Every structure is written in structure tokens, then in C-alpha cells.
Image (cartoon, rainbow, N blue to C red; front, side, top):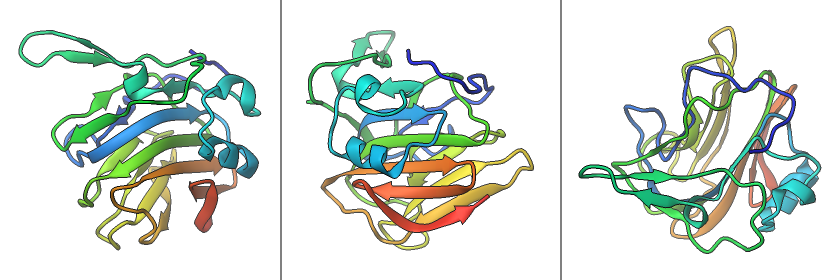
Length: 212
């Protein structure tokens, strides 16, 4: 597991494929989920969107966790349902060949392994099956130092939504209206750099940065 300076303890789990543990299950594919306890530069985001597969040596900072999803997943039968183990990766010398498809009824609980103070970057590759209100891609909510990387169809279909949760119990959010495609992969990044919350789609800054 990658490590760098930052707060890595929280009572709230990081979730993939759902907004929270009660609602907002995702329908579609998710791949290459990575989180930094720092703010990637615009140049790093553009490099990441180019499909690099060695996050440790190519970017200026290394992620706290990197879930390659289908490429590193192993299924362990347990009872009627079974469980997937999705380890984070130091380095994989191949491009991603597989992803996880979420059918709207399942999600991945990554455990209480991450939180941040004033800076964070959350990155994922997304393929939309259909837009449904407030589905979550990568989330951690209801605690100071939480974040949401999801969609906001209630505003406009295809809208993307990134938000961070502050210690005063307020959300700082950025929304990009109607930007995401259906049935095609796109790279989605949310960045909080200590001054502004920003959003990137396929390596390009979208929406209006929001101060915090």
C-alpha cells in the first residue's frame, strides 16, 4: 500500500459503486480507482487520463490506495453470496484489461482506510449504463474529511458531482452539468487543493472551481 503524509484513520468506510451504504447503488462499470491525500496538478491529471499503469513512478506524488478492480480482484466463496478481495497495488506492469460491473444491487466496502484534512484527489474510470438519480462512484460520507465522487441526475442527466465534507458539517461541491457520456468510458477526477474544489473529465478541467 502506498503511504504519504496525511490522516489515514476514519470511522467511515470508503465505498465503491454506491453513494452510501443505504442508497445510490451504481449501474455500470468502474475501473482503476485511486485516491491521494494531496492535490494532483492539472498536468498530473492529464497524464493520469492518458491511461498510465504505473502510478508510483510516473506521477509527481503516489496515491494512498489504488484499486485496479478486475485486474487485481479475487473471488472467495463464502456462503451463498461470496466476497471479492480487491487489494491496492504498488505497481502492475500491464494496462487494465478488466473492470467491475455494478448491477445496482451490490457495492464494495473498502474499510475504514482513508480520510483527509484539506487536500484530496479521487480518480476513477467510469462507464455509464444508464443514468439514475444520485448514484455513487467512489464515496465516503457523514464524517469530517469525507468526499463524494458521484452523479447528480436530479439537476441534469449526465451531470457529475464532486464534494468534500468539512468539520463544520457543510459540503463544498462542484457540479458539471450534462457532461458525461452514456455507454462509453470516461476518466473522472475530483480534486480539493486546499483552496478550491475542482473537477476533471478526460483530463480537462470542467465546471467552475468552488472556493472553500
